Length: 176
Image (cartoon, rainbow, N blue to C red; front, side):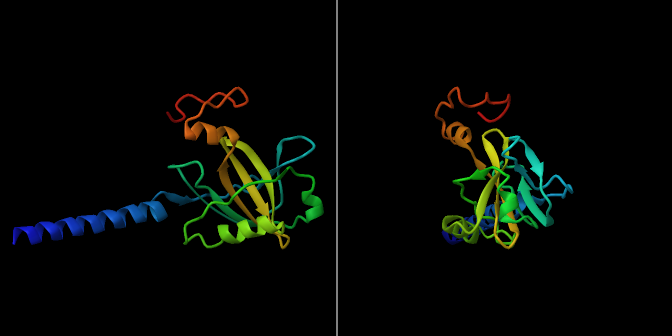
């Protein structure tokens, strides 16, 4: 009899722990970003090398303090592909999966569009956190998405290899 109770207790505790982990990963750490009109969507201009705001609407974003690469955003822009040619394009990048409840950000659709060349990617900002750049992708119909991804220095820093002299020094207190 005691063995059945102990086994039942282990199963119940395991189910509760699994549910808590699921909740924390999908809902718990995320928060909605408060929009800052004119500052939420920026692209790096080819001419100056500096981020510049672009016109946008319908902005929604989520982020989490637990990781610098949890940022995801959706928006629309009236800019045409000719106008976007003034901004720094990115040849490579991969949108990360967003939680299912953040339904405007479909990483698979964005990734397929990038692969086919239908959706173009641009640099929004370098080093929004150490080793993390903000990337923006824009479709021909004006839909746009933003996410953070590790840059060259970030990939090296987070996998433990020496970052080298081409990377900026890591700020005090930024990880181990």
